[in-house]
Amino acid sequence: MNPVILLGVFLGGGLGSLARHFSLLLSKIWFGDDFPYGTLFVNVLGCFLIGALMEIFALKVSQPARVQALLVTGFLGGFTTFSSFSLDVFKLVDTHQAMAAAAYVAASVFLSLIAVFAAAHLFRTILWHG
Image 1: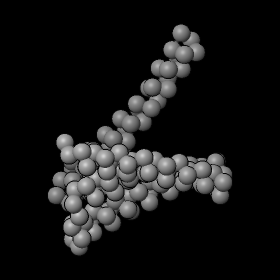
Image 2: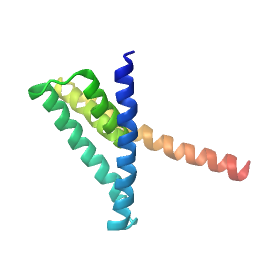
Image 3: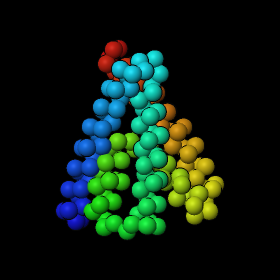
């Protein structure tokens, strides 16, 4: 484990999390909280940025691993993990694994929703009826 890369992930993750937090706060001020506009904005922007950075790094501006760790894994990972999910899907499709990509999308969405509902139900039961 390279300590410089780990530090980049750590710093980028903290900055990305702060950026997400302030984006969500601003979204509530600008649009209200009757719909998760902030989360939608963060997820779409994060996906755009991860796609842009990975193509720039791959095609035009080769960057050391520490820069990619700071910006992609760290900042965008802290900003939104949906961007990482979307990049995984892109990589599967880009390597001609469309069925695997579809299965990954379906499993990720389905299992994640089940996990949220199951955890909420479990902890409501434990905390309020236990």
